[in-house]
Length: 462
Image (cartoon, rainbow, N blue to C red; front, side, top):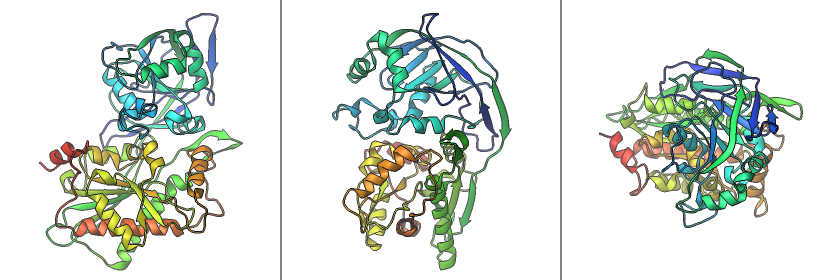
């Protein structure tokens, strides 16, 4: 079990580093049936609010629809929710299997706190989360980082494994039955005859972390505007051991993106290219802790006002598997950046494809371009193509599936002997060409009509 604080948007605030060695008590309402959990088992939780100890706090638990809290008073209660959206099983709802922001676990936590809930437990299944339980274990165990803020009503947030969820929800009809019911409009939360209690001992350290920013000055009257090329430089550090290895290297996620950002910066410097708009190269802090660095920067830009940031091009997990005939990015349909990216890819002899796997996993909402998009700045995040040169059809998707299951957010995300830079070079060249196109354009990119970020884009320019 892991507790920590949830962050605020103060760019200059210190960041709390939280170390936990805790024991959980999950009581199903019967005094003689108490299940104890330790780190690595079936319950993963985080603490928000003040950092003091609390002991044996118990709350009623409710089963909720996919993030929809209307019509129920959850103040002071713990809610059990399903991640993803009903579209996972009904293509007519939301965007079908394509994950929207409303299905992300981050949104579930935000909404639970807005509704005054004391806690939230999210049900994990590989299908709904789009990754395995090992990813939850790796991400929610050990040192946790949050920006210091005033405590809110939400005390705990965390995950329940599928097996633990089935036992907890059995008296109310079972996980499968409740999941099916929750997928229909009009579903109402089901009270559970269960209570949640915990004994927690916490160690807290306060430190500071930084976004690292460099600026290549533009030339002429648009030099005050900028295009951001970025990638996060953090990973998970030392955490729960897997097969005796506790070092979470993050070779692909995201040493590769950090290296690509630095390579792009070097290319600009060596070429001597100085487009009209400036180019900002940014290494984002604390992405794995909830996009903290990029969120703080987008909330209070210390170098360039938000209205003058023309676009954000994000690099998170590069292609180290070989050359491809295609390339992809999430967010292309959201703004006119998509056309510029497509033109840049064509110049490199690459066709642009839709990475359906990235859409299903909600990649657009999971990296550092997203806080900027939410603030109205057109943004996209680079994805690898899956049509690999010299490989059979389907090989790329096989590698993607294997990485998600066996290396993503695990110690095994290491630099493997067969990795090559060829595919990453292709991607980097497309990103640089896109950045130059934006920087040289007479006007900033615009949001597509009907995009959920269109209004924020207009407000940003006021």
